[in-house]
Image 1 (cartoon, rainbow, N blue to C red):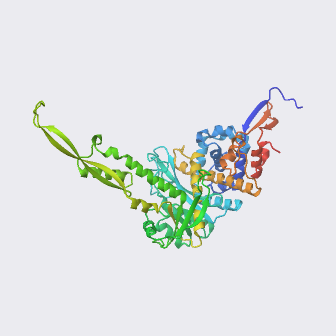
Image 2: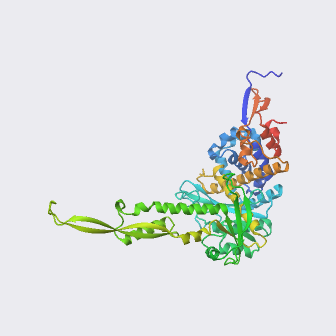
Image 3: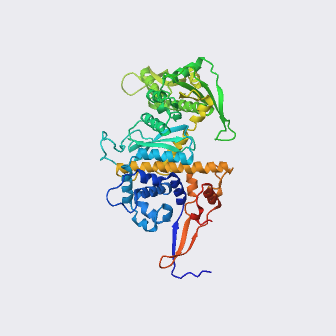
Length: 565
């Protein structure tokens, strides 16, 4: 038994998920790419390179999500080697150094850096690039940001300004954040930040061109929401021999034509997809039926129409709720004390206003009912007596009623559950097109995780150029997150592992998320006993759960960092 000196020191530092994150950053070759593409600084070089600082920042964003001023304290609680630092370097970390590293990143050619990073990821992780899904979101920020470069300045950062805010905060300024993922594991392969007032339809040509240059050809499927469905966007892709798939908005004339067409024409609907109802085992399956429109779009592209049984029921219930809401407002328009309106015109206008406000004027008609109220009034002034005479007075009142237009309701009911997809891809059948579009929510999930899990808003910076660089790092965060999930699930499938006990109380997860993978490692600590000279006498670690050890094995992470042989 080793006898330890009584005055030995106990050092306890957190290991957490930093070795796992570092493992993936090394596979990305992030530090090497940063050192290669960041412009050389003039004069004396800093103690810590900007590449090292930015890699630490990415790790912090993945695991801590704190303002930059909290970064030094976070680093001091961690084992420095797992962050790519030497023990004597941690004291050189502060928020100013992180800010200067973000400034350095801003001066780099980030488009070229992004291309080099994606090409390396595609090669290292063997990402399938035959299908892409694009979507935008807004990053809401707090502050005035009044000292921004003018809009006409060349090579300026995106402007933080007011726009259509998807966080439902029109009172705050924003940036538009565009991400494109591959259908192979929802791995982000492109991102760009735009001015806060940029419309969604204005980003597709630039995004598609980047993807085409990345691959060196245009033979891939580009999937996006209805903002892609403009003549300029679709024609540009078609002219470049590319393929696209998007959902057609209700504002297009082709939508009205088809809905009118099916009123009097029988369509050969065929079932293309069936799935269990997620709301309960006793509920009917969700069924999708489809038919190709006999008429192409005005641009000459295919129109594929689908009817979802779930959407059909939702549309019916939504219509019924709106009808009931309009009927419930009848008492408020019947005049004072419900006595009715004084003129028919006044009653008609009050009823029509309600129908338009509730958007049910297609299904309800205003009916005015005239009533006559009879009262007796004394003839002449004075106190009434036995000989007082009275005259009959008739007063007309007008009451509003809403009558359902059964024909209009039946006509709209025939269109319940419908939604159209537009494509120029001749090889896609109805089932394949639906399956590819149903992958679109995965890119929306990336946005949701960016805002909730990684807390991208509010941005804790006042310098607009640093905000732009920070969002570039958030893209790397999304990339690492997606690769962790993809690698975990692929390894589980290869080894036929149905689930891992990653949830609390060792509950199983059949499709682990990056958040689960990282959280099961967070809190793990490394302990050292040191003599008064700082020489290590003994080293030991917290216990690591079997699920955590299995996870590290699946991801080929060196378990020695956790004290496991």
